[in-house]
Length: 297
Image 1: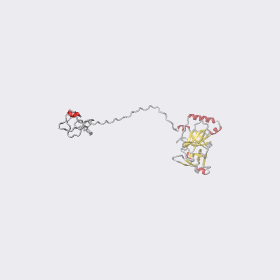
Image 2 (image 1 turned 180 degrees about the horizontal axis):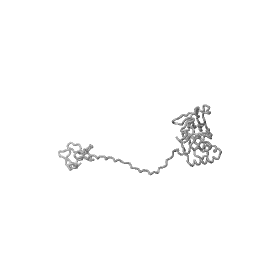
Image 3 (image 1 turned 60 degrees about the vertical axis):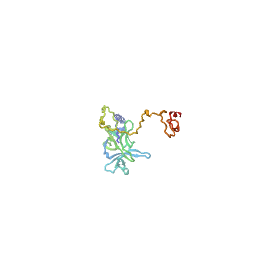
Image 4 (image 1 turned 120 degrees about the vertical axis):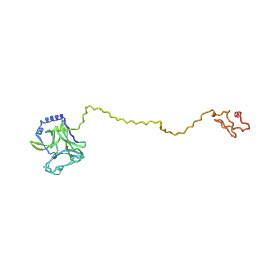
């Protein structure tokens, strides 16, 4: 992840004003006499150095490799994490081999050729899953600058990778290089570096919404009419036939006492319809029963 902070023009005006105010002192008058010279960026490295027992903290270490001398450090790149650094100079006497700066006496910020060592303090702070190299205003009147980051966290010494627009330079006095390192940049580089921002709402008139085109369905063909010459046979569901009661006629009318036929011979009893009790017919005689014989019962 790249962290790049732009500086507002008002902040630069405040920063310039504070520099002019401090410029009355002898320290800034001496700093204004310093110039800078370019360095081979591959021969200089900024390192987050861990320290502490209970909690791990980090400070800034800057190393420079003197050409054609014994190697001062070795980088171990990791695709998924920060670049680890093996400080080889701790294994031997590095005098005349490696140049080292460990505090504000050995490094500072320089912007547009102006030394801001009295205005900015360099420090390393944790931020999420990485460490940031920040330039923090000593007075709180200037904006904080993010110079670089470790781009990950791991145990041990980690390389600080500078953000675009920043580079290592060396302090010079009367054309002679000194042992002081600059983290150097320009206002143009800070202002022109793109930063992530929320896009402004668009004021353009939205295009009219075109209604979707609906493809008509093909009509479903109706079934052909049934021809009288070939009528379709209806599906018949077989049902149990219900007997039709016979029509009531005068010949089927209920018998009356006057129309009852004489009882059949040897009949033991005669049952009349309804709840009437069963009666025993008298023994037959030579003379057939008459209507009056039935009326006696």
